[in-house]
Image (cartoon, rainbow, N blue to C red; front, side, top):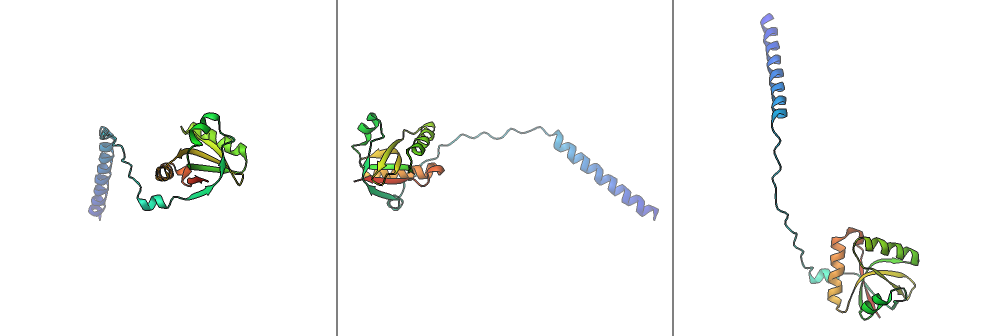
Length: 153
């Protein structure tokens, strides 16, 4: 019986010593530097015709009464507008525009025939170009995944 107890005690000591050695090995290993990789710019895929066709759009008469003269001159000649926000009250649209400016956009407000303040970030003469831009905004900016296309009457 003494032999069996002695053997069990020896095995426990042996395993405890091995475990301590393993822990020491882990602590004593020098830290490896992570492998450096070059950043590869993600290539943007062109949207398919089906994706472009699915872009929500709405046709309505709008006015540029709240847009500054420079904005009016640039955008009033266009027919297609990328809308990222729509508000009943002008103050809310203005606050949203300030957020967009902080993100690098150059927004302006269109007033719809129904009285809504449409916050626009781009305008185009070509419908396909406008739809591609709406698709890009929806894909790149999760906050604006509900962007849509306004077609001026």
